[in-house]
Length: 435
Image (tube, rainbow, N blue to C red):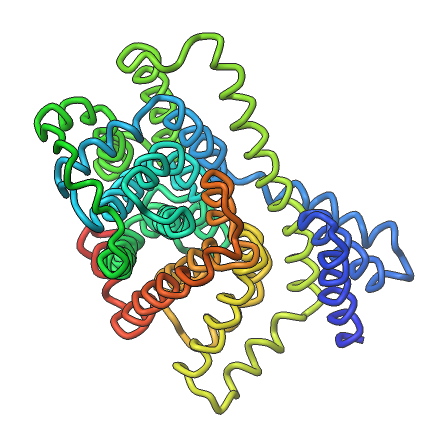
């Protein structure tokens, strides 16, 4: 009977997903069907667990931070912060062959410390960088690849929506611990991406036209970008010293962004606020709906005993710890090419939790590895969210990025291998901060 339930659950989900049914609906329907099959003698009392878990999945205090961090991305996108950060990064890096991709990666790191949304950062970067890169002689497909991959680091750089979700789903893991754990791997990934971006630019002569342009004044650029640079300090510093919780930090960041946009940069008008709030509400509603339906899916996996055999199989596997980890990461990498990060977390974390217990892996370290694999999927065709956004803005198809994207996937993969080999890359900072 358990095998039948597993076939119905996973087979039903895959079938609905292939037919184009939204991920949230596919998760909820397949989970509900399995719960009904397991309670045929009393369907009414059995399926009462569906609405209960639907609500319980999103009735968690840490999730209050999620819609606020989504709104932070929308607010700072309109506040004109990205453009001023680009000017500062250009003043630091200089102008020449291969410098604009480095500028994009630097700006992506700072934007990641504000919004934590790869797609939002990809859109903000594209709006500011694509025109400059086109005028400097960069191929549009290459520019789209650089921006899409650079924005992928944002789900590692705190505050990160993905890390908030992971901390909610895994018992005993706090949001602050995951935020701290993501800092060094996020910076490592940025350095890894900078290598192919610079080398490919030099090989193909991209950016030669940049040499003739004046270099922005560092102090002037720093002064104009200081308001945006202060945002990550306000968010992360305030949480670290205990001034406010992650949920309160997100609300403070929203207020700070609105003040910058309306009174400092004057890029947000009062009539723009309803549209900004509506955009944040729509994105948050989609994420919450996926989480609620995934709660039904996870309930069916756990309650019907489908997760325990996975843990037992992993414990008895001849592959060993490293072989099992590599296999799991490769699966997640492939899945990341087709599903968004939130869906991957909500589907796989309940399945992988028994494996964590069986192999005694550190859940913080594993969560960072999981997030890094999801990040690779955000710019790996065919369903790369960040890459789709940057390609749309650059006016190219995803297929045109294939000659370039493999180099960036390889570089990001090397960063993942480094965190696998040296777990302290993820665990040292939380320990140093006493988290």
